[in-house]
Image: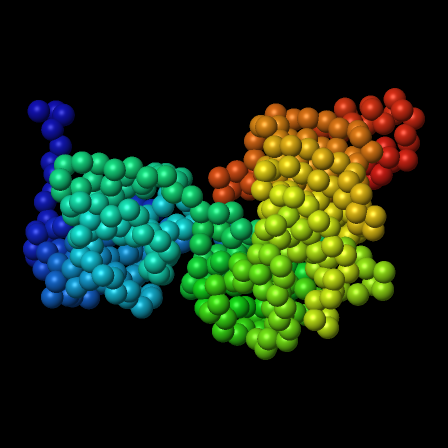
Length: 466
């Protein structure tokens, strides 16, 4: 009939077990029972054979992959699961791009997260087991074990849910969450993208640093960035290449296998914690100082200004205490603030004259750095930041609202979700489901309050930042 179209069939050398199109639609990958994987073009021409195994190549998927944060040229990596209990990685030209990773099961399904940069993959198969792995195939975590083989797993578009289909005929679904890791110092900011990349930002400039392992901790001091992987620490010096890109140069690296709880870059040294201990390391990896505190360390931030202008850190403990410690010679106590509830986060103002504490009951306290008197307290606070230019101007999220406020009482509320991570000019950067969204806030309401009280000095300080 007129609606019938001729379909061209192509003979292949053995049974096809899996097929997947590349993101741009130029390549079709086929894996075979014979152990062969081939790439075909859109016209049905066999282009490349990706090696040959003596075990079935049971599953495959394409991982979208960009070289830089602002790169418009996209490339894809093909991940193939073999019943020799390994997964291998290939580019669109048929080249083996990474070392194969051995796994402890027969892979039956590979699923890639739908994020632009393909942050992780799910490997499922024999024994009812599924694992979350990064782009290099390194295991991040295991999903709950099932009672039968898993033949198919599928990630949602955002990569926040996974559905698993089992040989028993049942389906299981799990929610996935990856903690948002970030740090900032002034106008510099860095955050983890996926599990292996760091995005660095300054104004409208961006840069990307890619690692072969999972990024566990990051900390920043000026133009120096420290990155902690499971077994190594990297120290980077940041700079500006041109008008649009940030450059990064690794100036030091050293092995560190300890499972540190907190990680903080202080001037030319690193401070890490393990339970109730603080340890100071040089950039060469030498441990310089170790001290034991009276409770587990929950968080570390830059310290308040000391009387002698010496470098310090502020430490929040599980028992609720806040300590300001001099970095040298052996973490002597500059001041101690005794509190009731455990400290979950400490945030320093840009001029280090004021600091904020969020406790484990989500109550916010803002303290004067020298007197330690409470300036402000609020309950049910999910996130807090100081303005990068005006230390008495703050932003915090509370009960589904975003609130901007000066420490002398002027405030405005907005119906915005997310945790504020940077407050600059009239805009705020919000973290929502591991994604950063910038929102511009109207200052009209808060300026009207200042004008009504004749507070021209406060109004001038706010207007100067816009």
